[in-house]
Image (tube, rainbow, N blue to C red; front, side, top):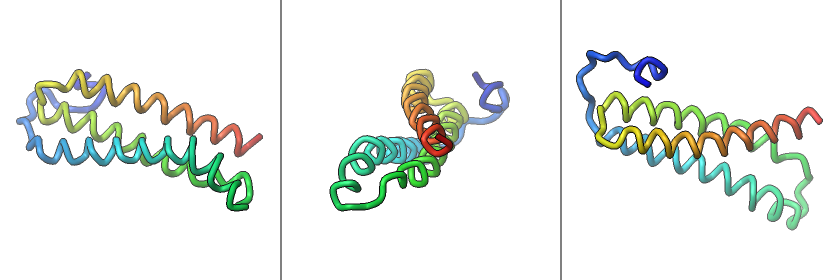
Length: 112
């Protein structure tokens, strides 16, 4: 896993407080992406008369940002040599898969 994340084997562990901050930010962005996809874009915007089709324009950038933070978060847990790095890697993997699915759906909607 260290090789996939480009974390050197001989690197000294880094501060865990920054690791938890990045984790919080990435989970927040992923949750925001899901809220946009399932509540704001399909329900709230049409209810207030905003044009349909703005979803991908909002969802794709937020989703890509969330995926970037997910990657950075996983990498940071491995760089910190955190004792629960495998559990957080699995959590990030599940969240990242959901967000990636939403980004792909948005791309399909955008070009379709």
